Image 1 (cartoon, rainbow, N blue to C red):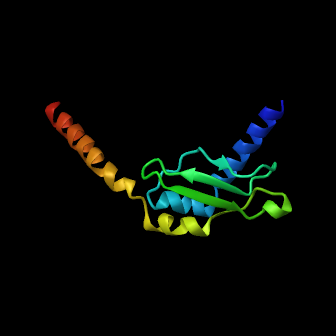
Image 2: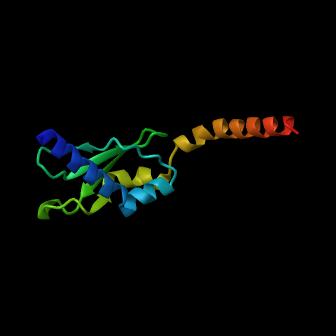
Image 3: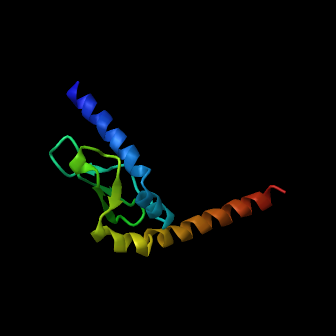
Length: 114
């Protein structure tokens, strides 16, 4: 019962984190943050969580600004994570040749059906 309650709280916290402005900005710079956020404290309320980009594998730390008052509703990208976030995703350029080759293959197959 306690485990289910903890998992529900973690899911709620992740959803709040994913709605934060910094999380949206991270995605806007090409990063593909996966849902594997990890709690980094032993209390019931997380004070910091990490998210990994599925493309470039960079790890981004988010701080819970509402932790001291007992909340989880305000998240901000940690100062140390900002430079990598602002630089954009290095893995997105690695995905481009695959995407371009898939587009070319689709276009070729579409031409062959005429």
